[in-house]
Length: 310
Image (cartoon, rainbow, N blue to C red; front, top):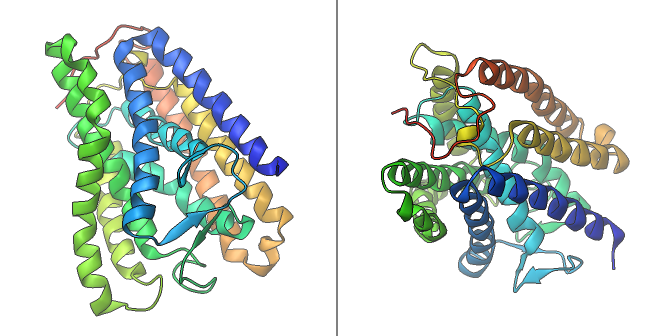
């Protein structure tokens, strides 16, 4: 048993159990949202490996359901739920929120995926260390945007529906299936265009950067523009705001430490620059979210369902 994998699984499970306890205290729907996010993560990993067969996980993971390590599903839940919590605290309107959630999630993957493959946590098939983004295919980053987008848009719709009809909150447990379907559909444009513009293994970075630029532009408007709503306090949270931020910092810190231990700071300095840049972005982001959250009328309350902001 590899102690590194055991450490990762125990740490992720601890974060998830704390998140689940706090969510359940907040209400049934936040708890269902967190559980469904974990189920979505497991479906995502199992489905992707069965359908596309583009990557595989190390055999060193202790607990897995077929090809999907359980810890990966839990981590997906924490990443998506944390992104949604920060978006709500920033006062982003519901119509923009799934896009902002997606940008917050990809900030993490850009920082750690190229490090994770060098640690052997997972392996991309037919993609060399110099292909794509330092061994990570562009399609992975593109997919990350729509993974979060799909889960967020459906979950936020369920929130709105359950505010009017609380007994329908159980529908949240069904979200993983249509969210995965939305992801598959969203991959079609990338899959069709990539061979025409960048057929190399792991290629398609231009398509990803263009998509990220569009998401990023809308995110900037949603967060800093004049069309903002009232920041939601704890009434609309899957995760506690401090736990959401702490989880993100823990992920950054772990992979930054691994980068230094592996000597990537000197052999691949761009990975260090990106990791530090993404970590640095967390600090003003956390400060702004906390500042707006403290000024929200419902800050510190625990009622659920939340009020609604189109």
